[in-house]
Amino acid sequence: MNIELKENTLTPEEFIRLRVDAGAMEVPYAQAEKALENGLFTVSAYHEEKLIGMGRLVGDGSMYWYIQDVAVLPEYQRKGIGSAIVERLISHAQGSLTAPWASIGLTARKGKEPFYEKLGFTRLPNDGCGAGMRKGITASE
Image (tube, rainbow, N blue to C red; front, side, top):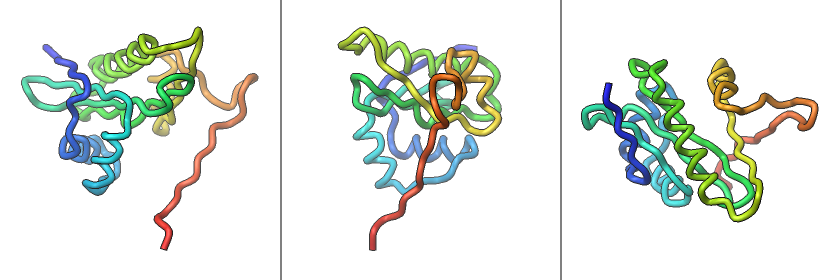
């Protein structure tokens, strides 16, 4: 199977459609557009011109990077596409370092932790770090 990876070409329409098709929540167009504008780097995977996978890097572009929105269509999963996307995201971050170290974090979907462990990520909490945490927020009225 010939898969083409493209950098920084993901459109809001593609982003929304792939999220839904891969089983994630649909987001409003304006939110997708702003997320892509404010992100640092995207990777999109195509098979015969069809978008089949994506991933994004967000963060400060120096010390802290976060991998977001890794998604691959179900019929293309377990074919190395997700790994190729994540590896390209990591490579981009490594190539952008301005100091000897940085941190790349992510929140894995439940059950997908082994996928990321194979790519070198460690579960939290562990001996050196506490649990990752997050809080959902809504627009102020």
